[in-house]
Amino acid sequence: MMEPRLIQNFVGYRAVIVTDAKSAVLQLEVNLLKLGLVPFYPEIVDGGVQLDMAKLHEDQDVLFIDSDLNVTIEPPAGHKLSLPPVIGIVGVGAPSRLKSLMRLGATATLRKPVHGGSVYSALFVGVNEFRCRRALMQRLEDHDKRRRGRRYLVKAIVAVMKANGGDEDQAYDRLRREAMRQRLSLEDYCEMFIRALPGADEKSVEFQGTRRADTSQ
Image 1 (cartoon, rainbow, N blue to C red):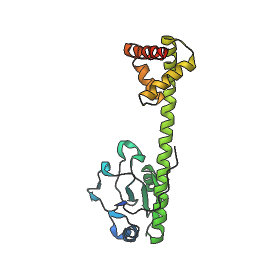
Image 2: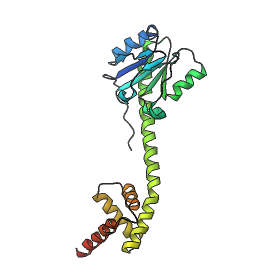
Image 3: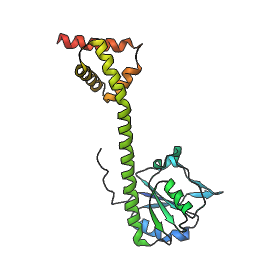
Image 4: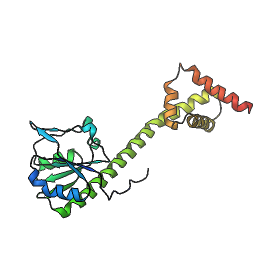
């Protein structure tokens, strides 16, 4: 998997600023507008943020969260990387408040009062670090998926050898060709193949038919 490209231009991004003290972030808003971002302040009603997480987009939104705000924001399904990039606005640097920002996956911070010169740096680091973490997480998930799929590959090789004869290389090649034909990864095809056993006669027929076709050629 290729490394994500660095984002340097934030024109068109939406800056979702979660705070109940707009006066403390006026300089932030001014600089965000200069950088081409569109500020948006979600409502805070009865200590809760009126924010539809399903409408946040990882590559279009940046969350700025005031750590002095006593409001809990829950990531979807308890997964912090389901949120867009998070930049904390830190006033009181209490460990409990910093911990809350970390829990939300904050990748950069701004100190109160916000100075104009620090906004772009926080954006650059926060957004690009988020993208790197997301790419790494995806890579780990793909690796884990392939690792789990290896057991199905081994079982499928054994099953094909029993059904059609031949050695491991021939069985592997037969599975690989069939996976390519069905436009599936080898691991995904082998899992589907094994889950269809032992009652999937059509699979055996398919392989036998393939073998007969190969022989006839």
